[in-house]
Length: 176
Image (cartoon, rainbow, N blue to C red; front, side, top):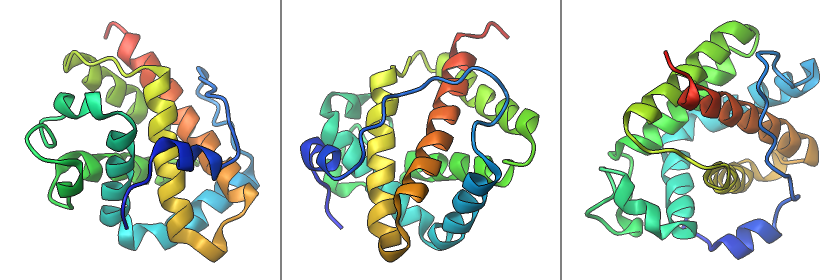
């Protein structure tokens, strides 16, 4: 699977504005949580490849960010593979989030700490970075899920991704 440019990624999806969600109430309905969990079961066996595809797309959309990632600094985007840590860490964060959807406090605590870790790295991801990462993620899972894809699947994953991003941003700005 090769990467695509941001124009084709953007045109193939519903346009969702980024919504930073600051509360610990998970903004997904029970049905949306079920949709995320069921589609995760399909994605999970291929999460490493999915993570690689996400970062190939994300860094193709934001080539200036490549130098910010130790894993990617000295390689071309096409050389990103399953041994690179950030794609694995992204997919682990998503997996941890999916498995804790029934416990908002555990979920929010985990994602808040991810934001704090990014703050210690002196890299402040912007909302635009999260929008592009979400686009890359959604496009990658849409491609993988193929016949299981629907507007409900997309909306559910977008809500989850935006919730995670909003809590991460909050963690980045927290003092503890």
